Length: 249
Image (tube, rainbow, N blue to C red):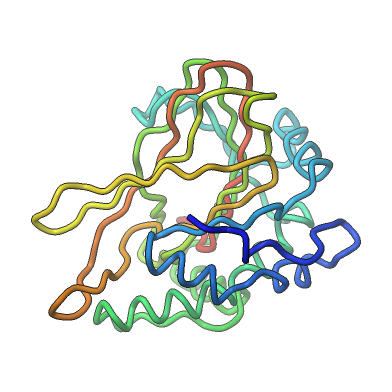
C-alpha cells in the first residue's frame, strides 16, 4: 500500500483540523480505498496529541460505557465509548474527515445498487441518526496489554451505518508495544477470503470499509463483506482511538 503521496504538507497543532485533513491527497486515498478497502493517513496526529488522548482512558467522566471484551466474546482487552460532548480534537476530526469519506461512500452505494446516500456534512448525517433513535456517540478509546486481541467484527449499531470508519494508532510499535497488528479480511463470493495487514506508526490513521464495498468484476461491480480486528499484543500497552461516524441506539 503506497502512502508516499498521501502525507499532508503540515501535520502540526498549528494547523486547524480541517486544513490538516484537507491537505491529504484524497484522490490517492480514494484509489487505495477502492482497490484494497483501506487507506493509511500518515501522521494525522502528533505524538503529543496521541499521548493526550491516551491519558484520557482512566478518566471516567469522558466516557459513557466501559466494555471488557472477554465478557462478550469480542476477544481480550477493553475499550470505552466517549460521551458527548466529545473531546475537541476528536469532534473536529469526525467533522473534517466525514465530507471526504461521504463522497466515496456514495460512490460505493451507487456501484452496489444501494439507494442510501449520505449528506455532505456530518451534522446532517447525525440528525438522521438521531431521528432514527441512534443518539449515543460511538467514538471509542481501546486499550490492549500482553495477550489481548480483538476478534474480527463489524461496528454496526443500528439501521443507519456509515460504511467507512477511521482508527488512529496512539502508541508507537516496537517502543510502546509489540504485536497488535491491525487486520482486515475481505470475504468474496465463491472465493477464499483476502487478508490485509495494515502497518501503522504512532499518529497514523487507517480509513477502512465497515461492512461492504464494491469490487469491479468482469460483469460489473459485485459486493464483498469485510471485517476488521487486531492481532495478539505480545508486550507493552497499545492504545487506539476509533472514529465511527454513525451514532448508536
